[in-house]
Image (cartoon, rainbow, N blue to C red; front, side, top):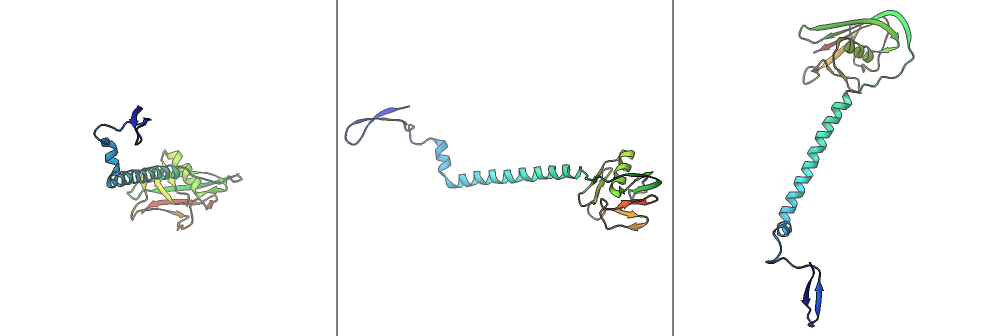
Length: 171
């Protein structure tokens, strides 16, 4: 609210801001202290960092749920591929189906999971992260074997042929 005031030469001057009665208001006095400003800045900064970590965790969980398989030319072959999943607690699930060639081992696992109603997560690096809510963690991992031999290759890189046996073990 504008107010009138006399300047040093005695001329009346219209002023725009009336200073609050009793000096500065409490809100401005609070923010004039440097320590309070830094404290508020730190709270905002760490809150932002925490929000980024939470959103990154959500993103990575969603990212694992997508599996990328290349589109390959398919040919029907009249042979079978067997996929066995060993949960390590005497629980095993086995699936067998005819092969369309070429079939990637990860695709065979995905088809077995769909047929058995099991959730499946494979990382983009080709590591099995989770099968039917059993996650690779700590000293226990999902390892996979092709025709009885341990595989170190990505499950997303190995093409299967008719008669192949894929075994996944939680060990």
